[in-house]
Structure formats: structure tokens, C-alpha cells
Image 1 (cartoon, rainbow, N blue to C red):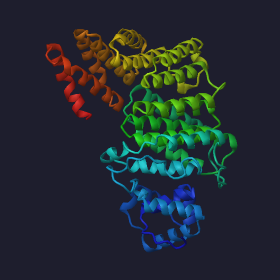
Image 2 (image 1 turned 180 degrees about the horizontal axis):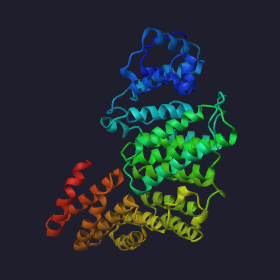
Image 3 (image 1 turned 45 degrees about the vertical axis):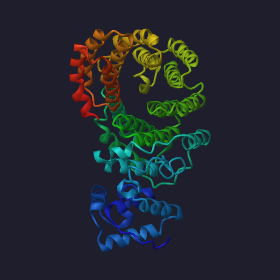
Image 4 (image 1 turned 180 degrees about the vertical axis):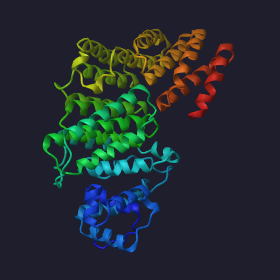
Length: 467
């Protein structure tokens, strides 16, 4: 592979830097070029062709890389991953695969590749991003192996000066702000900003730091990656979301935070539940519960039980659903929010009722007799929901509309529906859009009712805008 022929553009140079695990300044120093040039290559990507001298320098760095690094570079360029695009088109990319080295290589390399691909992604590629979610043994085997064995040894790094606890604390605070924004609004409105911040943290992790500082940096990466996953999912980028969840799991392992690892695994399971992959989701939840036994607060345990109940509801196992739901209620009684980590603060009494109410609503679609119970639970969620939780409030109220229709209370469904649309209009959440489309389809059987026709007229442009 020595001397492989490469057409060097900014994209290839940036790819090489990531595979070598070098921050921009270190890469510039090693190549004998200005840091501003490295930044320009990263920004312009494949639109800039390197001059002969710069190309020769890049070729020399590639030739001096390890065999593994050269192999990764060759694989990425052969698959056209330097442009953030898979080699195949959207009509054939239906079998999900992890990015190379997702579970085995150093997390900084994985994070670099993933963030770069994401930042180059535009809205025209969203159809491609919806494909390729990993499922079945390719999903479960490497994850379970990683949970058992942990991260690979870190690559020795060059010392860095000027990075201290104060800077790390500022990064941690930024991660909290981004997560809070997603919890409140949804829709991925600041997704690119989160990915950009993730890339900056990854650059810091590419250098050598004292163990405690590195642990906290890894924890910040885990938080940002999970937020990027949630925002990507809520923007319709399913494949990217799953890969960010995996990166967050890796980073939280390096941060030695098994409780957050379990929460991220549960997040990955929730995404699969939204895609109807119930059996895989249930297996992930069980892995999360086993991995974190004895390390979770009551609030976090209750959240995991609601995810377990969710899977059983989809699998048409009502008895198992009741058992998991009862455990969630029982454990939640011991919840002490003041002692909870900030990342589980979203899970309150409203979230408990709303999540389980939504699952009873799932069962009511098969047996309308369950609609009364769904209404009781969702109504409690609406009453308890904090006013700044726009996405959750929209999901609650749309669920109430559907439950009233299943109950046969059409006029009440219309009354609730108009209020729900006022909330729906405040979020760009893909999850809310899908829920709205479901409710819109449900109203079709009542089109002859004047109130329903009026409600559908108001729904129609919102549904069309997100189709």
C-alpha cells in the first residue's frame, strides 16, 4: 500500500489528519504548513485541490503512517467516505453497517469521521440518512462484547498545555445547555452546533491530559454525542443518530460512567422502538439493566422499566407490559430528583404517565376498550407537564386526540385537536410530525363530521410541510 496514488483535495487531507489522530495545530506542525491552511482544507473539503508541494507532503505523511492507518485511509477513499457519502446510492443502501472501527478503534478517530460526515451532510441527503440502521446480531453482538470488555487501549498522545479544569467545566456547561434545548423544543434546531462542539472536544481528546481531566472530557463527549443522536433522530437522520448513540456509549465508557452508558443504550433502544424493531430494542434494554445493576438512581431505573414496557406493548405481550409498568411506578415512588444526575431530570411524573399512556394507546389501536385508560394516563401527563417541554406536550396532546377518536368522542377530539395544533406549530420535531400524520389519517373515517373536516383543513398544511 506504500505509495498508493491519491488525488489530494482538502477532504483527503482532512481525512488523513483524522486517521492520524492529530489536532489541527499538531498536524500543521508535522506537515510544516500554517494552521490556517489546515483549517481552510477542512472548510473547503473536496472543492479545493492541493498544489503539488502540499500533495507531496500529504503523500509522505500517508506513506509514513502505520499499516492500519493506511488501510483505513484506503477504505475510506475507496468508499468515497471523504465526501461524507457512502459509495452506493439511496436505493440500495438498505443493510446497516457500523462505520469502520466503531467498536474497536480509538474514539477520537470514530468521532472525527462521524462529525465530519455529518457536517458535510445537507438536506438533500436526508433520504439516504434514513437508511442503514444496524439491527439484529450486527447491532447486538459488538455492543454486548464492548459492554463486557470495554474500550481498547488509548493511543499515546503528545502533551498539550493551556487546557485546564476551567475550560473543561465550560464545555460541560455547554453540553448541558444543548441537552436542555433538545429536551424542551426538539426538532434538531441546534444540531449542527452540537456536532461542531463535539468536534472541538474531540480535538482536545486527541492530545494527552491528566487522567481526571481526560475522563471529564470523555464524559463531555458522551453528553454531546447523545444530544447529537437525539437531535439527529428528531430530524429524521436515523442512521447518523444510531452512530452517535454508539459513540456516546464508547465515550461514557472511557469516562467510567456506567449509569450514563445504560441511559444511552436505552436511548438507542427507544430509537429502534420508533422504527418497530421491538425484539432488538428489548434486548438492548435488558443489556442496559444488567450492565448498570446497583449503579442507578430510582428515577433512572423507572425510566428503563418504561422502555421495557414499551417493548412488550409493541410485542403484543400485555401481561409483561403490566408487570414492567408496575415496576416503573413502584420504583419511581423512591425517586429523589435532588440526587439525580442532570441528564435524567427530564424523566418526571409527567414523563412517566405520558410514556406509559402512549403505550396503552398503542394497545387501544388493537382493542379500543383500552382507550379510557390511555386517556386517564395522558390527561395526567398533560396536567403535570412542565410548560417549557414543547415536544412532549405536542406528543401528549396528539395522543389525547387519537384516544378520544378511538373512544368515539369525536367532538371532544376536535376540541383537543385545535389546542394540540397550537403546540405542534412550535416544534419542528420529526417525531411530532409522524404523530400528527397518524392522527390526520385517523380522522379520515369521520370526514363527514363538520368539526372533523375543519380540523383536517387546519392539519393538512402541517402534514404536507413535513411529508
